[in-house]
Length: 608
Image 1 (tube, rainbow, N blue to C red):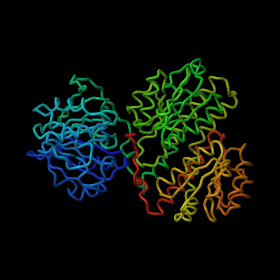
Image 2: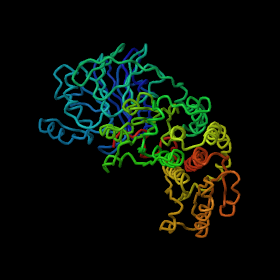
Image 3: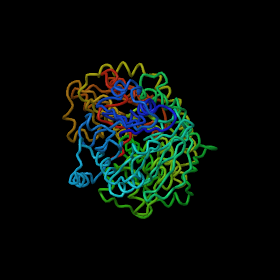
Image 4: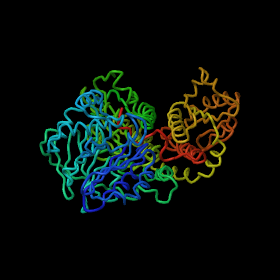
């Protein structure tokens, strides 16, 4: 949610800021703005709408000269999307400019205090409070003013700050909202995420909670909220810069779907050695794995759906009880974490606010936390006791595809590791599963190369009003993700149901011509799922089936069948989701939707 880019150095700031913000469009936003110091004063230009509006207003940044500045893409929380509510925000004298990600929870109280002291507000945002509060405390020393403000505000923030009195400096601060800074020969950078500055530098520093950074053109210094200087080590980003570009594909989502074979390979390869599962970063002995009595998987959105699959796989292979929680519900239900429990949190960005809060709650209660994340140095990666990286590379499209696939692989590996340590799987079955895992990348590629068949089918349902996905067991978990993909990028109403629950009420929603996608990849459940398909077909549904090669019996109950290659049933999600991702993509393209940036959505949800 929201994006911040700042620059101070030898080059013109505005074009760099615009370019950086364009790399953060995946985060979701409804307005954009920039503040640039021109040698005399800070100029601000901001506008509701896409970044293109800001680019046009500033002629690509050429009308805003200056070598230091900050920019922002806003996702509305406090106040409607508008020019006035867009960032940056000024103090009344227009000598301090601020951009902010996060939420200031006590802004009403602070706003009243400032209003009582004669300050006037032009926006409905919580961020403008920060600008005026900085003005209130500023007596010539920016660090003093910033630290006083940070002691007063409650909530989450990533801040970029400029002072007219100190044109040779930018300031950044962070609490519970992601922020990095970077350095190159041409200058120093502030950003919400690595892709914004990857074009300019691979040397970055991760800003930790309640830290402040003072940036100049050629160096930067880090401080605690009490102004104590901190020494930090840089991190070198290994991503290929082209990984954050479309590289000839029409959309990032399509590109990222086609990167899934490589993503699966990269997540698998380092962890399969001599026909065994080796997860070095787990750093747990067989005795420690055997001592785990229960696993709690906590995640949001698509990551939660991988967790639902993980429950079936872990329980089936390792015979260990698993609970799966939506992170936004986990803390507030006062979860019972018994001795011997292990908490697994899953997040692509490693910054998901609710998931991060669940991690902290678990650690505060004294429980070990494993983080499955994609971003090295992210908050979850730094705060979890153990980290398992998914190595998916940058994922730009809001609707996840390759990160989802990588998370599935991580959970398969984890389940097999537990199963081997606990003696719940035979050596022969374990070896066969490793071979099945190794085949997944080629099988995914085969399905992707059959996209024309899916595209033709998708074109028939561009005008659909309702689509339902049904399945049992792991197939229900697949249905959850398939339904989310369709609704989030095409805006078609879609629901996923455990197939056996249809007759308990939801079958009343089936009308003549309604599309029902039945996922049937679990051999033990083929017959049961077919009976559910017959039920909906009898009520007028058009039935699309996704099943494994060889299950020809399903053709009697389905109107259209998509076959996936044979694999171990526990790994079927990795294959069955591919045609369903393609289906959602082509429906969305056919409707003319903004596939990579769906309305109202953000890639990284960094506020509760």
